[in-house]
Image: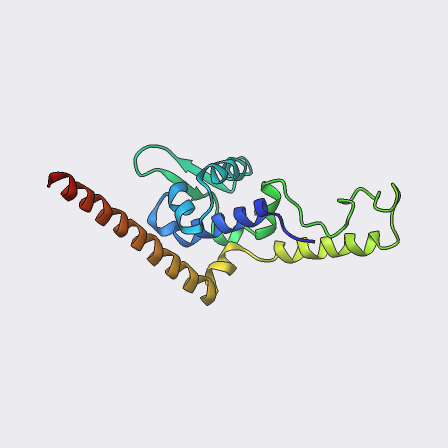
Length: 166
């Protein structure tokens, strides 16, 4: 049993958005750079997150995405559900056909576990995650790396310009 990449990336991107919300609308390019998630994949995820009413988009220069509700009102399970994912511990995907087309002996155990996991994730809000010191530390490191990458790009561009002048 594991959470798929789609679900993990959706939660990661939403947490990034929550951590940087005070800066105004956040571009997917910024999230992509900080979290190392492809921009096209984020576009697909945010389309679903927007349809679920978890984010809103702002068009134009300085545009991007914002949380549609407060961080305390958005739970991790809701994010995973929005991208059509589930945390399912059964081997049959909940279809009751795990043993030769029929229900296996332990089907209800794994179904109950899946429900417990969903309930656990439903009890964790983005605000809970943002409040964690460990999350704040990782975010500071990622922000520093993103700024360093931008400075490196500026230096490379200036070196290329100077090289072209010689």
